[in-house]
Length: 259
Image (cartoon, one colour):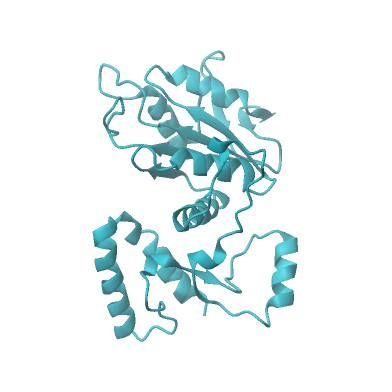
């Protein structure tokens, strides 16, 4: 009952997420046609694109806080899993009078679904890369979600790359936020997950061989889950319970293509 709709939701936001605006309409037509041919039990509602719907009711997600699970059990009889519009999940926008103008975030369909998918990926310890043109709100909405919209078990820190950012600076910043667990193992306090938000990922200048050292450092962690200590020569520092969320714009204006 739950596997089929979640498969289509995952299909839309993996393969389908690579489409631009015009291609999304073609993908929508293709997916609806295939679902009709296969007699899918719960097709997407008509009138909007498949990108405009999410699952509601008893969605089957595990790992929720106990209070949420208890509330869902109480209302389980009244709710069933179904496709609903993202607009139905948008929170009420309440702006306090003392809020600074540049801190105001008005929820839209794009911010709601981006935050939903970001939270799902971060909770499952996946590395996230947000790509979009300058001025589309990548930094503001992502930072707001990580700082204010995540459970208490998640800690976050913002790192902004520039053309002068070095691998040593990046390593020092990350190492300074982590505690020693035992010999060679470093991480946040027990029971916590540290999320590093790296903004302007592709800004560091290219070195002589065309690489960007700060990005190569992050790649080393993703491949080997750590890096060498620059003071204790030969000692490898394993970094646990951390993940990265990155944002960048297209190449140009100081931003470099990433290999």
